[in-house]
Length: 338
Image (cartoon, rainbow, N blue to C red; front, side, top):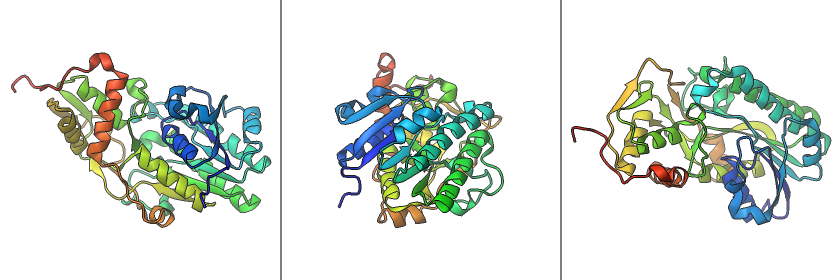
């Protein structure tokens, strides 16, 4: 039987990037979906394909009264609400990232307990892991040392959400799933200011904008596991179905891609050929981030990602064309000597 069929499911932050993949899949599975989003980082048209199938509440989960209201009568609460930006912004706004994410995470959790929500999902992050942790990284090392330095405020907020989930599950008997996504990307991404954007959309946009030379922060050898939003949504819902003990589950896999190789794939897919310069004076974050997916596979019947990196980048090119249509000239070389 389909776990989600007929269930009343509230999705906090459902108009954001991850929600744009999770909410349509919930609708397809037959859930009765309510989306709660303050639209600070979310967009109504992210859910245009299912707008007639969901109830939309514009409200802020950092408000205790809102949390009380939207958790009543729900079977499941999936809390995707977060303030999550790229490294350039996060590394200089730790207090803001800590406070806003603590409020958006802990207040809905407490309200869900008070209103007897059947199951709750905490979305944590791979940023809880320290920079020098062993890779591929297993879930048991999530509280070793300090979180990733460039995202330290965000990482501490996510650790505290996980800790609260552990207490509620242990002391109050709540059914809670905790997921730790690694680097997600996909064509539903909504562009923010450059300093707030994430690595894949930032590089795709800069290449298609015609930057030449293309200056990339770090050595280019830093590696990331990249997971498309469609794959992420599928495995996240499977984890929620099958994990309720607040034990964290990595949403990512062992394979990782050097940033230099990511740039090459972007150039191949777009047909652009800028000169690429890696600026080693700039921070690059953790040198390598990829997940031990052992627990994830055990909960998802051995699921492996379906969207290849090249397919995913092609999806991002379509994203660019939709988002920046005035800048979409035909592919051309970006080097004067070619």
